[in-house]
Length: 185
Length: 359
Image (cartoon, rainbow over all chains, first blue to last red; front, side):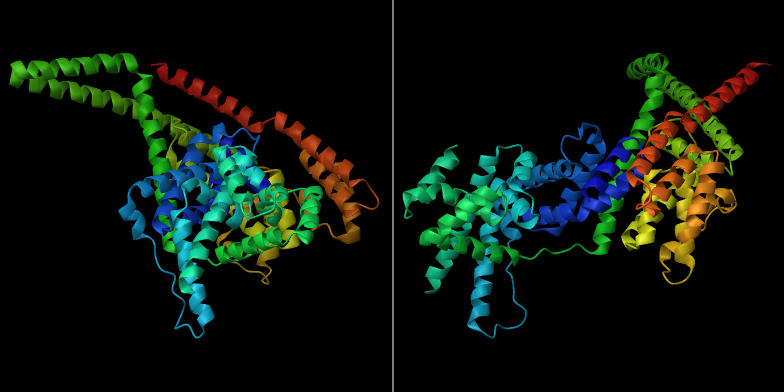
């Protein structure tokens, strides 16, 4: 997929507008997933996807091929998502607007399921309150499966910083889940 | 750095002192982001250290929970809206570039007239009637000048189109149409409708190629790879045609198949070249060799050699065949036919203009 992406990007850069369409087809869903994990909103995520590809279109000549095209596109998407989240965090009211409860289908038959739902809701809330830098690191590593080295490249940070950021994010999540357990007991 | 320091403090509390570096790498270990040697060290440590093993367990559970957070997918309508909005934004950006071109192409005269326009407006404050009259006159003149420019561009666009029509029934028409359309999109002086109409063939071919890749059929993927290897060439057209034949046999019909109609000129292509794609098993050897011996087209020859190498990889050297194919393809690129056609057309434009200047 990476090779196809780079080939399409090269074709697009040399003036093939059809290749741009195919590039969007190739990456739009992955970029959407990243954006959604960051914003929790379909509309906002689609806006990010659109802005991301608009920037790809305008700035394709800045892609220097030292990094793969998907790294380059991820970098754009990650920056957009982080900026978006930072703006949202400033506006606490709107941020609270998209914290939705995860509902299990039907009534929980067993205590296990109820517990699971409580923990998931808590987890969702915690993930949504993670600082943008921690959140994007979790999204790229855990959900997108990108190696830490590549995330460091995408985020423009040292590998150690990324490792540390991921570690901190996990610590925050674990602490919150422990609190839930303690409340229930 | 401060993050690292606070983490170290956190990590070290409640765990043996030598666990710090291990805990630091526990997440990379969990995600498989460290080399085997380091992974071995961590595994050795985990076997003898209960707190670190517990820590890994907690990581696993947390990661497991993270897996359960859902992603809501957009509806197909939402995707379509996003795509059309993206297209509109791109197009509006391009069109604004096109609009800007004539303004910068005649900066002197327009700037002078715009300053006149300002003067006229100022005069209008003093002498309203005369001012309004002057402004109207000036606007008409500016519009006339602009229309003249647009008309010239349209004429030029039509002329390019005529040249494409002249080249019909030839692959160059495809290349030329694509070139024209791309130039138009970049803001060049072309007629959009005609260029777009002609570029449809190329677009269809590309889309078809993507559809083939999605189908995942071994033969179709091979053929689509051929198209990708030599886009905008006879080989691509032939591969496309072959793929169409396969799909239209009825066992794998798709919407794309129904939509696609190979152009007449592609159907009537030189039979000798089609042998490459009709080649089958034993007959392939003979047919491919006959293509290699008789074809005058370097690309076809190279492809046949490549195909030969591929089919008889136990007999010949496929790597060498591939290298040769790629080398010849590079050689072909150097003799870019499109560039020649551009020169030809430009020459014809020059002659046409010269003829028009004569009374």
